Amino acid sequence: MPSLAPPRTRSSDLVRAARREPVSRTPVWFMRQAGRSLPEYRAVREGTTMLEACTRPELVAEITVQPVRRHGVDAAIFFSDIVVPLKAVGLDLDIVAGVGPVVAEPIRSRADLDRLPELTSEHVPYITDAVRLLVAELGDTPLIGFAGAPFTLASYLVEGGPSKNHVRTKALMHGDPDLWHALCDRLAQISGAFLRVQAEAGASVVQLFDSWVGALSRADYSRYVQPHSAKALAAVADLDVPRIHFGVGTGELLPLMGATGAEVVGVDYRVSLTDASDRIGPDHAVQGNLDPALLFAPWDVLRDIVVDIVEQGRRTPGHIFNLGHGVLPDVDPDVLTRVTELVHEVSTR
Ligand code: CP3
Image 1 (tube, rainbow, N blue to C red):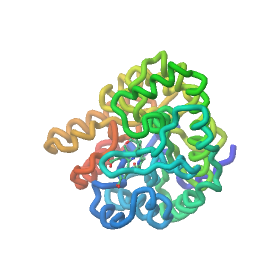
Image 2 (image 1 turned 45 degrees about the vertical axis):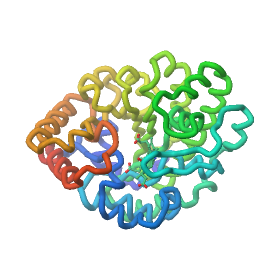
Image 3 (image 1 turned 60 degrees about the vertical axis):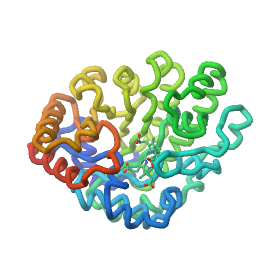
Image 4 (image 1 turned 30 degrees about the vertical axis):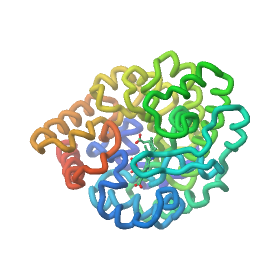
């Protein structure tokens, strides 16, 4: 099995926890740790659009490293966005501040699929360059590469932007299953190739985000989503990189998400970590699951909740501490630093 990630991150607590091996202390990082909660992020991003920033390797590397420097977290998450590979293959889309990804012409017919060619590494040279810069700079700290999962990407493409009820997406899924599967098969190729570019350039772990898949029933997930997420994850199965799979509101779907091939299942804050692990089973590590809203609670309260999650994590096969969803932009970053220190302090073996 080729090991492309730098060998020194192989013994990091993050990689060891993902592999359900003993750790020196519980590894911790935060989804959306790079971003608007940090004044140093707002300073370097000034005057650059989000998508433009994602194509500048030096800027991407600087933003990715900022939370590692500030909080002492156990991993860096590559600064990019789930829609970057879609933009890279030529789709007309933008990220609108305070809204999210917006697609100029939604994808709703078979002819629309022609606007979505397969992704190769030549579409994203700036990703390879940024990952290489980062791996050199991060040393022993592992870099997490990521991609959006087919369902969540499909939702943005079919709806044309963020959606509460995913009405058009579900109508397409059930109304034209052949087109749905063709779309998701293409998206699985794009997601898988995007993960592979990052892993081949030196990312030590990858995470597949299916943020909005909690909108589906188990039956719909199994039939319309799971095979495509499995295909995206299979694209890096021969590389020595543990795979994390995360979604929001996925209490009912957790075992099915584990069965996609991921080594680690991300858990949101609606299910306790031990219940989630019981549902997923002994062959998977878990990641999570502090409610990001609780970062605004008084420290004494937050402290007890963090300690409880660390203790629950010890009763699972492997635990990576994280939030149950992303950092909210107006959080006090000092709280994230304190949570990182606390997780390390109470989990040191
Ligand atoms: O720190 C990190 O986690 C790395 C960077 C990262 C971003 N987006 C940067 C970003 C990651 C991992 C993502 C993934 C992503 N993008 C997801 C999955 C994770 C999740 O939160 O569920 C989703 C659903 C998206 C789509 C998207 N892009 C949304 C919903 C938004 C926010 C829109 C807004 O302004 O509220 C974006 C834009 C985006 N992606 C920002 C950042 C830092 C904000 C834009 C900015 O700073 O100008």
